[in-house]
Structure formats: structure tokens, C-alpha cells
Length: 341
Image (cartoon, rainbow, N blue to C red; front, side):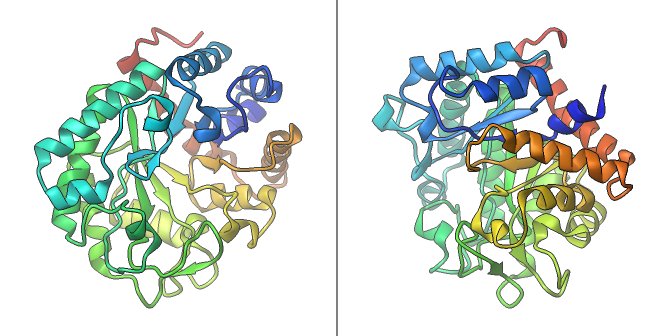
């Protein structure tokens, strides 16, 4: 496979419309340049019928299982919302307060069946951050199960299993832990050096010990004891050291949205992409970029040039690509893709 297409398959992108006719560049990126996946937001979803058609049209463009992701955590973060004729859903905080694993499993099963029937194969959930700060933006939005790592692990595992039964990939977030922070990385730099606690790793340790190997999302947070120069999403010390070596995670690592202000204030998108892959990231998420057609091609070109200059090794690209192929293989086996075309 040519380098450009291989690099394209390491990216998941957003786009601003409910159909492909108004955004032909996304079709071209998937069909002609190997874009690996898309993420859908409320702006892409009008109702169940429209969503099924959009996903079917997207899948038809790709010679391999296309990753179609969504944030369907439940409650406040529900892209498939009841206002658009989808079933209503409970947020993680409500399920955590109820603390009934069977209820969590039932709610997750409804979500997973809905996603599968819509053509979506990746849910960016569960959130395994701990509720350690009453003023945390995730807690305010009802996105956290609990302050108790054992309870978080228990309910997160129910969510994961329900999705696995339907062939839906999941993604633990936000590593190494966003629950103690005071800032929101959507809007600027977040520093967890003084607030982060070691118990924030416990849900990851518990879930990984059960064989979890889908995705883990790196948060855009600084922990300056581990790495004084880079946020977690760009830090080889945190990705290759803490996550890979210490916690022995073998699945795919994805960035949080590289279009968040925490990152756009840090560097240009092309440079962020190179830094992230060099640091050990496998999947680059650009969810809310400016929507211009050339954006994707510029990112791919910057990565190609980094490889040609020796700044980014082909071995690192192959490592990331192989992990993404492992995700696609599971989609293919679970959701009826016989072979890549």
C-alpha cells in the first residue's frame, strides 16, 4: 500500500453536513485517498432514516470497513438524541448513582443495538475519569460514573461488554485522567500536575487486566512531572512509558480532538499530526476543523514529508497502521464484512 493511503487510514475526521452531496470532498478523501474514518456530531444527524442513509453512503465509498464513530455516552452527550426521534438515554452519573450493573448493561445494550442498526461501529465511550473535583466540567455535565474507581470499572465494563456483543468498538477516555482538573481542554491548556491522583489509573488497570484492547483516548492535559514539555496526547513518556510499558496496553491509542483550543494554541495541525504519531499515537482525530477540502490533504502531505526527512519512521507508521487494521478486522468479523474489496 502506498504511503499516502496508509497515513490517511490513521485519521478520523469530522465534516459539517447531513449528506455527502453537500460535502463531496469527504467522499473523495475516503474513496481516493484512504481516509480511515469519520466522526459524526449532531450537525450530521437529522433523524434515524437520514442517519442510516448517511452511514450506508459512507460505507459504500470504502474498500475496507470504514470506521464511523460517535460520542453516544448517554445523557448530555448524546449525538443520537431524543429531540431527533432517537430513544432517550441515561447519563453516566445517573447510572453511577443508581449503581445497578444490570441497569447499566441494559442501557448500554439499547445504545449498542441502535448504533449497529444505524451503521456506526465505534462509540467514544465509556468515560472512566473519576469524579474528584466538584467543579470539573465533566462532572457538571453528568458524564462521570463516580469518584470510586471500583464502581467506575464495574459500570464501564458493562458498557464495553454490551457494545462488544453488537460488534461496536469502544474507547476509554481521557487518559491519564481528567476528573481532577479545573480547566476544560476544549477551550485551553489544562494542567493536572497538582490535582491528578494515582487512583485515576485504577479503572484503566482493572479494565486492561480483563483483556481490553480497543482504543484509549489521550487527553490534552499536562502532567509536568511526567513530561514538562508536552501534553499527554503528544507525550512519548506518557504514551509509550506509562500506558504501553507500565499498563501494558496493546490496543490503539487515539488523540482527543486535535482541533480543540488546547491544541490549536499549541501548534499548527500539520505539526500536531507529526508530533502525535512520533509520540506513539495510532489514530489522529480532527473532529472540528474548518471544513476546507485541502485540510486532510495538507495533514497527509506533512506526514509524508516527515517520513521522507526521517523525522517520522516508517516503522512507527506501520505499527500504527497495523493497530488500526486490527480494529477493522474486528469490525469485519462482527458486522458482516466478508473481505476487503
